[in-house]
Image (tube, rainbow, N blue to C red; front, side, top):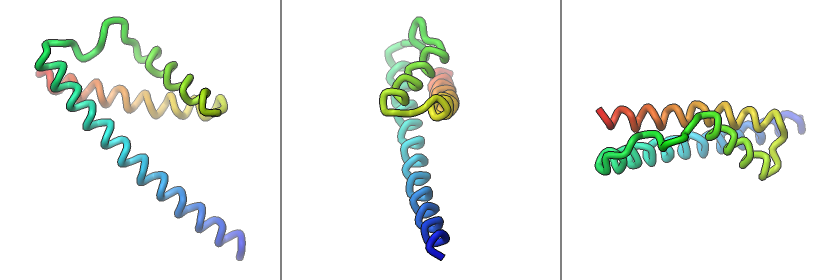
Length: 97
């Protein structure tokens, strides 16, 4: 029974982390909308010169490594940010139209 109690506690903890992730993703998307609005008002392109998705993802991998992530976790971070960065670009491009 102790193991089941521990599993329940871990599930609650995972739920807490999931809620935090959802809140942070929504906050990031709001920042992307505001950035897109500023760029549009200033006549700036959505993507800065020299931007590549690979450079952006490598920077996130390095941040993950700096806080102790292993290779597998770095790959997860890169995968998550691939979606987040593309979503932000899509939002900003939508505001340019």
